[in-house]
Image (cartoon, rainbow over all chains, first blue to last red; front, side):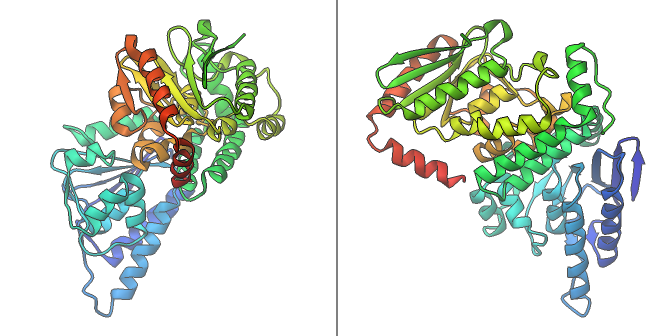
Length: 236
Length: 213
């Protein structure tokens, strides 16, 4: 399920149905990645065109275990500091949509559809609303609207590519040449700031910026720019 | 002088004037902006402030040539808290308009995003390329960008640092109007004069600003 090559970790889903066992595996993967210092980019993709649109939850005796495991898995993914990219090349719904909303960048094709069907776990409605706007989120989550690829791209939710796999690999390579610290702190500032008042968020941004200023990456980045050469970031 | 001021009644045009450096923000320009906006805040005869750049573009971002000459991080933090230019502009009690042409890159774009509206010429180019040089947007960009557009566009633009253009900036909600380059000054002045005719602009500005707070 997890492979790591240099700075890029790839998580490949081979199922289209979220089960308690799969949720546990994905949680383990997220906890491993939490401490994988060398990793700056995490790609999550599926072997099927569809992105986890089904769940195995009949509401019976296993319901609580399923619910708990999925929620804990989503919490673990939400805590990842790395840039997360999701490849969504087909139907994305249910827990698939929850995971897609935890990604920072989503790449798909003309075949991609975004829908809410059934379970909404891990704060997905709030995150989706922050990602695309309140009205659109209401339309999808309450009104049952199925968003096609073009609309998803217009809203910024999806980048539509002829070959999503190739596009995500190219983008991951490009981003991994940037400063890992700078990307992680930018991500943290945007995400945490969205739950703060503007003024509190600006103070948070400033403190993160001051931390970045103490990094080797910042020194190297500015020196490389002034010397007109490519920077060699160490993530330190 | 790295800032030029031009007054038209209740409208003040503030021009960033380091054209040879594409108006890159160094300590002197930052301090001049702080002083200007403090004065603007206290001038009750002013109602609208237009911020623009001289020469080829609006502002190419931070002047990296002065990095390393400055203070320690602790000193920088204290200076920022004592003379927070970005906060003075964001909370300015006048209606602020960014007039954008050419490059609005890095803290140049962030500066523009602190204004109430942005009007751009069709040749305007935008980007937040900080991560590629080991930095992060820190002139309020990580907060103003998602509040102007949405979280999805903000993540994309801030993490990839990709360039985007006037038409895209309008689609994302970052720019409110695009005009041909030779019509930019006239359009922005008309916009400013229209604001002056709105008797309730202060109340409306306060409510709209509070809605994203």
